[in-house]
Image (cartoon, rainbow, N blue to C red; front, side, top):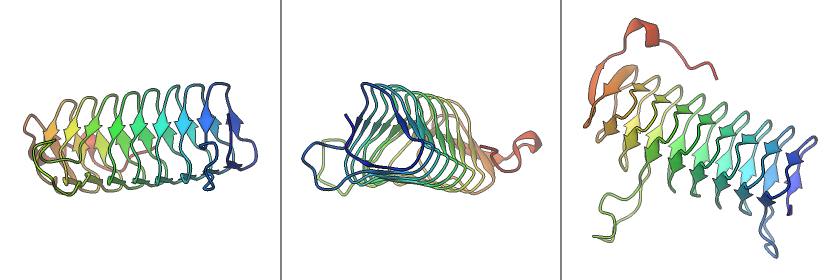
Length: 191
């Protein structure tokens, strides 16, 4: 089912849902998008050009996504989130509400962002992490609520970020420690 404002050359495969029936706010999807089967995109989502999903991706309400973004298979963008340009969210990534993702950011398979510092124990304001431009997050990494990942940071696979990571550093371990960025990892992402 499709109920959306679609740009030119947008492919919505069978079994994908774009827009919520009866909702006055239609999602907007730019040109040259591919939305694969099983994907659900809520109403009032705004997506730029050359957007791609894997199968069974979910993009919830009040999300703004830039150009050249990939939302991989079984990835969940849980709404009220901003995603920049040239971002790659690989298979099984979880992005909670109130997360901000800059440009040319990579999140590896099954990376998890969180937004509740005291899950179901206290009534607090939710705050997702902030990922600045050119951050690269390894597979199975976990980012705790409110953490800022600085520009050009490289987060190792399986790392657990409990505090802000300074720009241009390597975060490794659980809880993560910060080290100088090794020369082979220096520079910007090429997404």
